[in-house]
Length: 216
Image (tube, helix red, strand yellow):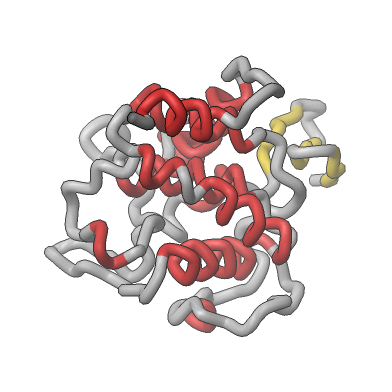
């Protein structure tokens, strides 16, 4: 099987002349800050606090060569659009389920949102690249990734970052879920594509306009 890389995707060509385009973890963000903010608030209007973290995702992603918009889309999946409600609590600043393995296991706790997002970006890099980190490691699970670069594409995170990575009530295996584009990684990609479709204005940043409307 041959691999060709293009902007935002990795195209896999098999000997049977079929192709499958996947989204690479590493690279530059495609979604804009406003698209990401708007998309979150369209799903959870009460999440303006978390929408303000969007620049952190983009900046931290840029520093490590990881797509910050992909990391943000992953957080939407992990937190239910920052509604939480699962084992991980908002005060943990853990927006990617790091260390949360079920059975009331709350997972990692970080001092600040910045630290939590940085750890998430670093963990994504552990899966998506063999390159060293550019910043001091704050991800307590970075060394626990069995093989660096074992998931170059977002769609491959199912069964690795999240286990089993699919709805066992709908599918008999991860392979079948991936075939239906309904695995953990596919859900992240779906949000990523949806964010790209958000129409934006280049005049005043979206959250700044909200703040102005709410000012007395």
